[in-house]
Length: 316
Image 1 (spheres, rainbow, N blue to C red):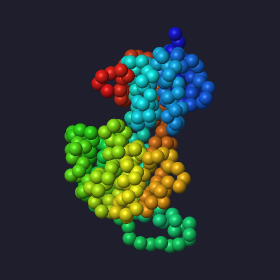
Image 2 (spheres, rainbow, N blue to C red; image 1 turned 30 degrees about the vertical axis):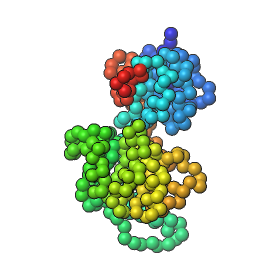
Image 3 (spheres, helix red, strand yellow; image 1 turned 90 degrees about the vertical axis):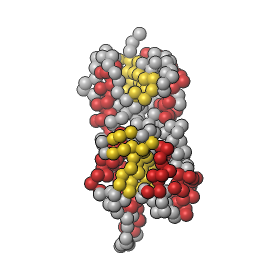
Image 4 (cartoon, helix red, strand yellow; image 1 turned 45 degrees about the horizontal axis):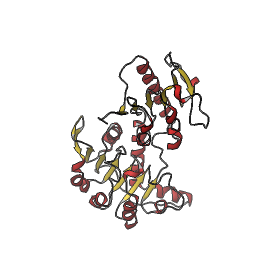
């Protein structure tokens, strides 16, 4: 049986793909580039709907590696019951950290310094001065201290924050200080001026930012979400925004895409970007490096990077 590899990046953009695989370009087109049963390595198309990404899985009876180009893999996990046991699912850790952390800081600064108001005033040719918040001397809480959360903190360093607190699923030490477990969130939230969400979407984090979470945030605090939309209860957030007690900057929403007419569009104190944390000029070169490295590891039977789970494993 042939060993095919389906890649969502044009093959002529690679110069160093390892030998031994038959490469096909597939970026979600209706027509498959070959028989899915011959596919051994499936690199999932980027920025496509879930139904597009999982469509070939039913026929991939002999796949041996599924590699996403996203940090989050929740949409793929939901379809892995179609895959035989023993297949690793790998994410794109190392590809999106810089871009997503940049956006987290951009959204934070834009919200605190009133940039959306300046843009609206410029469109009206109105000189709108005023007093705005600075990031300096603020207390920041990062919820989800993985690779992206750590990259966010790296970029906070020159802004002279009063304090940066870190939260992950379980507590641990880090180079910059202690990482608190999720169970300590209730005690940390009231101290934070800015709460940045960078956690993966799991059964534990779905709806994590609910009415109780938001109620524990201090008056005037800013919520920044560069994680996944369903981490936040949209109805609960809308209530806080409409009261004027909290503000928010959201790169992800629930639902997503946010439909026209949704009340979140017009809610006071919210800045919305259309899920653009990852797709920047930094993406493609990093994605290609990751794909080549993983393919070499696969062909040389070396341990793969970024294994999130293995199908059929009881340890998942």
